[in-house]
Amino acid sequence: MGVVVVLVVLMMTAQGFGGGQAISFSDLRLEAENQQISEILVRGDSEVIVSYKDGRRASYTKSFNDDVLGLLGYQNAAEAPFEYMSETADNSGAFLLNLLIILIPSAIILYFFWRMMRNVRSGQDQAMNFGRSRARVSRDMERPQVTFDDVAGAEEAKEELKEVVEFLKEPEKFIRLGARVPKGVLMVGPPGTGKTLMARAVAGEAGAPFFSISGSEFVEMFVGV
Image (cartoon, rainbow, N blue to C red; front, side, top):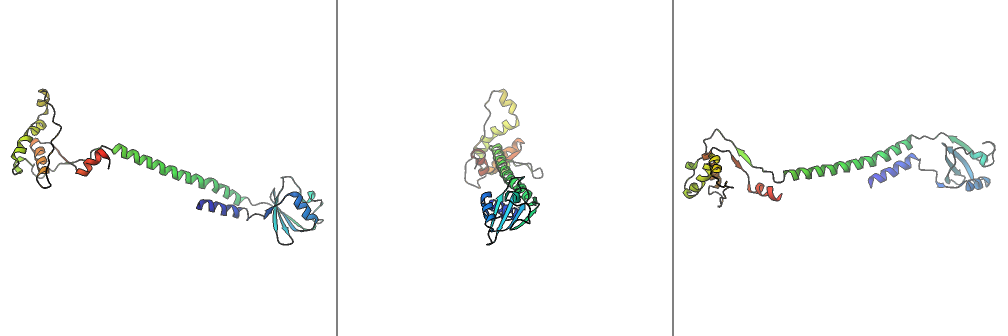
């Protein structure tokens, strides 16, 4: 809306706010015969600005080769009962206006197209990242590896996890025997009961890297929330 207002203001400025009400040539000739006209200004090739004795103004659009004085029946300006002037039109304002009329809508269209493409690209990036693991690998070589000896109690859990440790150490042996590869182990319990420490101990016993991921990030991999 603001752009439309700016364009209208520029158009009015470029046209010098116009010459008032548009009239036909028959009206112009009748008013000239009745000596109601005080001045006629021919601007450029087609614009005719008519000023009246009562202060009104009007405009008339002539053809390119029309001689206004001759059409009104006068041989020259001295015979006319009004002041007759002509001037070369300044087309710089109209040129700038036409340029702005082209550039401003084009810039707006390009801006919205750029925003749309950026949103599409963002959606594609999110789609490509959907299901991608955000797990972080822990490779702390300065501290000793965590083993089952560092986990107090939970002997039954340790015993069950030894099979996982053996598979991580020698997976070829299990595959050669046709054993089914374990998908993982689900450890359930309230916070602070040693689940993460037990997982670190499994990685330490097997000499495997330890990956960690929060519960919310794990859920986001599958539901995208």
